[in-house]
Image (tube, rainbow over all chains, first blue to last red; front, side, top):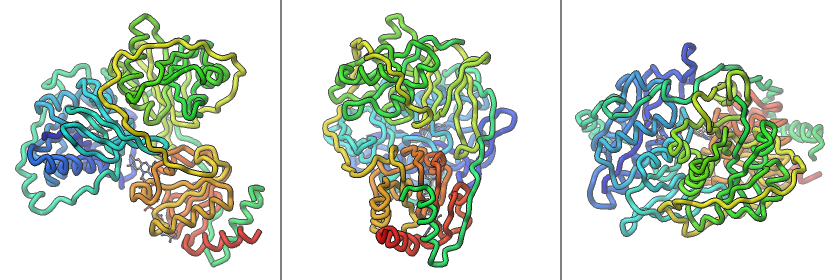
Amino acid sequence: MNVIVCVKQIPDPAVPGALDGSTNTLKRDGKLILDDSDAYGVEMALQLVDKAGGGEVSLVSMAPNSETSGLRTALAMGAAKGVLVSDPALQGSDALTTAKILAAAVQRLGGADLIIAATESSDGYTGTVPEQMAEVLGLPSVTFAKKVSVENGALKVDRQTESGYDEVTCPLPALISVTAGVVEPRYPSFKGIMAAKSKPVEEVKASDLGVTPVGWEGAGQKIASVTQAEARQAGEVIEDDGETFGKIVEFLENLKVI
Amino acid sequence: MALNNIWVFAQIANGTPTSSTLELLSKARSLTSNVVAFLGADGGNAAAALGEFGATKVYATGDLGGALPGVAVAGAMKAVIDAGETPDLVMFPQNYEGRDVMARLSVKLDKTVITNNVDIAESGDGVTVTTPIFGGNTLVNTAFTGAAPFLAAFRPKSFAAESAGGPAAAVTSVSVPDAGAAKVTAVHVEETSGPKLDEADIVVSGGRGLGEASNYSLIEELSKLLKAAPGASRAIVDAGWVPYSFQVGQTGKVVKPNVYIAVGISGATQHMVGMKGSKNIIAINKDKEAPIFGVADLGIVGDAMKVVPKLIEALKGR
Ligand SMILES: Cc1cc2nc3c(=O)[nH]c(=O)nc-3n(C[C@H](O)[C@H](O)[C@H](O)COP(=O)(O)OP(=O)(O)OC[C@H]3O[C@@H](n4cnc5c(N)ncnc54)[C@H](O)[C@@H]3O)c2cc1C
Ligand SMILES: Nc1ncnc2c1ncn2[C@@H]1O[C@H](COP(=O)(O)O)[C@@H](O)[C@H]1O
């Protein structure tokens, strides 16, 4: 079984985000890392291939500045190879263009039995890219998967819903998006990290994939303005001395909710 | 550009339209008198409520019979558009089904979809939507370019749901050209009692600061005493302490209760976007630098394991 995982490379979430003053887009010029949300997909893919007893895990990613550090992390976990789409022309691309690019990268890898993405990225969180990719590729999909197995050549998925979960079956090939916590991502071993350095990553441009228009031109939207929301004022902060529960009671009494 | 014809992707739960549906219909009717509720379900029973909140027409696919709504409803929408009716705007709720339908439709129409919005306006510049970023501190206003239909998704509770006293909307059946290959074979509903998280007057949420799963019982006990709904940060949902339906935040519920009590929650931006609109916020956290204190009206710097049991005793004694 061959699986392709979408891995987004994002600015380190521990560093507070900022907007580029000239374009009003998120700054993505520093070093990028593997989005945690995609580590679950990589792990899921490795486990499914392992269970199937053959096949490999490949990666697709779209990122600026020929960035590969996030891809290398996923390769170190055990993926075999990847396609990176990196192209200044892609700056300003919307989710739809991103989906077209990633779908084309999937096709460049010759497709797969299963494509895995995360339910949403940590920095963009439009949450639409996976389902858009499925539509571009003409594949069935199951989004918000919290448990995944392959039985008799078909997917069995527990799909998160607002009020619980649904059991869903779906023939392969298909695309799924997985939620955080679906599996416990492994830490890359030292051996894995060393091996990842020599695993192949093909870098391509949007034009190599035949996707046009891209970037601002293809976006169907433009940022009109950026404003600051009214900040909420912090109130009283007190150190607990064993009696502060009384402050909470008083606060609730004043609001007449108790 | 004027928005003359607006579609709202409408959803039904337990026989009635969801609150997000009513919020979007209320906003839509303030923009135009031509509002279609597009349902991926049977329309009959909901037509009265949909009409009351502003729908002048209902398009309904009928029961989807286990098909997932992404392929099925987007295909039904595309079929109506191909038959000659083009909406200027399609509004979606930012939730699971909304996301799947808008994503599929966006590819079918080759149109961008702007997600995570809290507002929409028409002006000389065209149609602009507002998206909060960085935990809601910064608002980005984005204009659609190109030709309609514009596709936009809105976070829950962005608009007030207000009855317009309208008559029941006429229901037109629409066909589903493709149900998709994925099939729901069983539905599991996690039972909850007490007030609903996104409707409760008081919400008590617990986070990783509770230390271990069994300590969540403190949150449940406090909730019961306050007739509150218990909530959670994603950290403890991912850890499996409580079901996903408890999650407050960007990928969970948006809550705007009278009182929000955050226990052992740091106040990550993704949590804050789901609760910052609460009228009053109380936070208990042992780290005085925790970001949650930046939005709290009353902040207690202390050990939740000490403060909460005492609070529970005090409330019991009343
Ligand atoms: C794409 C994406 C979407 C996300 N969506 C959501 C979402 O919808 N909702 C959400 O909540 N998160 C969401 N997150 C996760 C979010 O970034 C945080 O990781 C999460 O909110 C942290 O949960 P927490 O506050 O419980 O845990 P932590 O951040 O670990 O905080 C625990 C807090 O407890 C305090 N504490 C420890 N011991 C005690 C004690 N004895 N008494 C009192 N206080 C104590 C600590 O000081 C600390 O502040 C999302 C993240 C991503 C990337
Ligand atoms: N630039 C990208 N490169 C690789 N994968 C991506 C990219 N953008 C989105 N994805 C995938 O799609 C998921 C959802 O992204 P989003 O729609 O931005 O929330 C991500 O978690 C990734 O799995």
